Image (cartoon, rainbow over all chains, first blue to last red):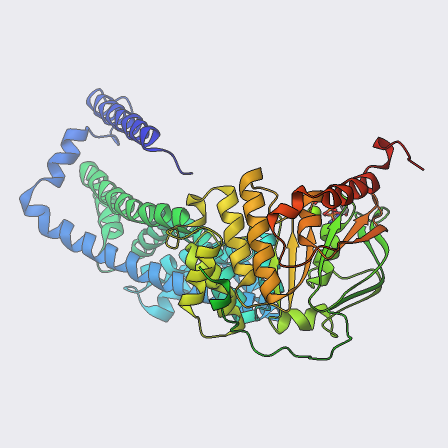
Length: 253
Length: 277
Ligand SMILES: Nc1ncnc2c1ncn2[C@@H]1O[C@H](COP(=O)(O)OP(=O)(O)OP(=O)(O)O)[C@@H](O)[C@H]1O
Ligand SMILES: [Mg+2]
């Protein structure tokens, strides 16, 4: 996990080479129509993205999606973390919290969407699906993290007469942080998938809406532009959570 | 630095009754269940008393149950047979009252705390107001001055072990349990730590039970040395150590010291001796 500086630079280099290869391949496949009409050249997609008259549309869509993702992400985190704490601090509730979470996760978001639309409205449904996805991952990461305490540390706290709360505050919680941070990183793609899915059901704004509209009008470069925008949102959130994870695993691991 | 300047901050002992041994084991046995069929007999029929203010060392071959005995006294394991009391009460009560200091084979420092905060941890767990001066003094005493802000990861194995000992001494415990705390140290540091521990101990007379593999260490530090047999561990020999306190490191060069060391080594490895039974 803690790769040294040398191997980190090497990772970056291989990563960059990979990305460039991918982009070149994309352009070639598009230029020679190797994958049919649905695959535009990279340059035509970039053309769309760089059209000044579309900036307003893109900006509104990205703002709406980022807002939904962030709200859903935070709400999902708070619920998942809180629910996991509940099950951890009151072990009698643990079976209940585990099962509730498993059941919620087992219902496909597609099936829940009509209900969510009725409850929260079209505009808030992306937030709700995003929150549900994040909730599940954070719940699991927190629950397992709180149990990941090293045996000798547990013994130390017992021998020094730690009460339940102190054991949680000074041992279990810090020991759980690396797992929680890893869960937060894992939750980024899930959050974005949930939000875009929610937007497909007819949200008034968003990158997901842009995709649906482009698809229905067969504006292929536009569709790909929307996909690229969502990838950009996902990658920047991934970069941020990776930094947090790196710090936390270094400090608490 | 003067050791006498380190003042106890722990609350008054829960019992002050003279005559009650600080640690009492009465025919204690411990079996570990491996699976539905198999059990390991780790300790069998161990009875011992550690008087208030006594320093007792336990020697014995690897796997004979020394750590198991210490863990039972620290309330970390339940005996299968017999009874066990600490300061006239159960080990669990004694631990809950923050009367114990403990240093394991494994330093058990928390990786996310600095050395200072690790040593100060017992204050937090006992809900006592932290005395930063005492923490600093103890860190100095174990030779870690300057490393207060370091994290355990940045220290050597021996330094971590010393931090764990400082932590064990912090609350001036009524019972100090040490499980090979110097096992990871080089010979020179180990001897230094022995001399230091002996000095601290001679002033505070904390009831101490030390598990060690070093016969020299046991004889230099303890009032009484207990030798255990191989598994299932039971007591095969008890030897009183007569040296005056405080003990000067020079006692380790006396004939009497060597005599005791030989006697105990013989008890530990009877086959190596000439007069094996
Ligand atoms: N949790 C456990 N489960 C099963 N067996 C155990 C457990 N703890 C200890 N034992 C067994 O009990 C015996 C005594 O172990 P213990 O750790 O007390 O030995 P020890 O005298 O401290 O040895 P060492 O000097 O190597 O530290 C060993 O045979 C060990 O395998
Ligand atoms: Mg041991």
